Length: 211
Image (tube, rainbow, N blue to C red; front, top):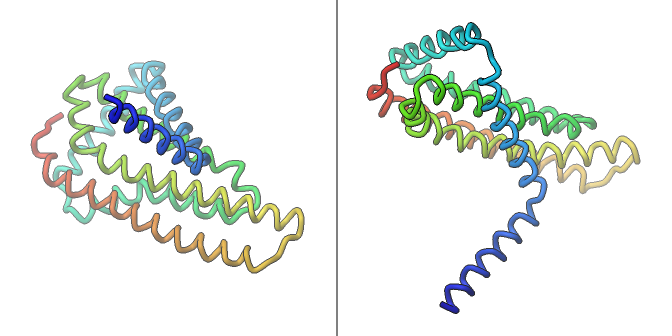
């Protein structure tokens, strides 16, 4: 019993240390979750006519994914996430970007929350099963990519604002930019991985669903 308590305390301490060392990432994750919550609420506030139009778009997208070549599914999945990553990346190069960057995970969260709420409201547990099996793995990986690039972009943007306001110039700033490019390329690779996961799951499981 004592060993179990010590193990739990150690796990709690490690988790706390992880959060404290990544405060900005934890805050951005909370913003993403807030977006998911707001997106989930938005479906209930919409008129039936709007929901019906969204339903038509969803069914068209589902049919296209069922018949399109895998390459087009991959491009579609990649572009839907890449726009968030690319937006955050370039905002990181702005001296005022860190002010607007939290809206990137917020909007992403709203999109996720809206999708899951729509599927549940229209198709119940069948819709949730579709999301968990086909959509969620790719969404999870891509959301991590968005959080990571937003975190890095906020750090660089804040550093650039210090250069702009206080005229700071040093080798450290140039080194930060090189690090940003490297980490950005890693995030782009992670984004590509999320699109690959989405494509593979579509190929493997989409045939078992019908809307």
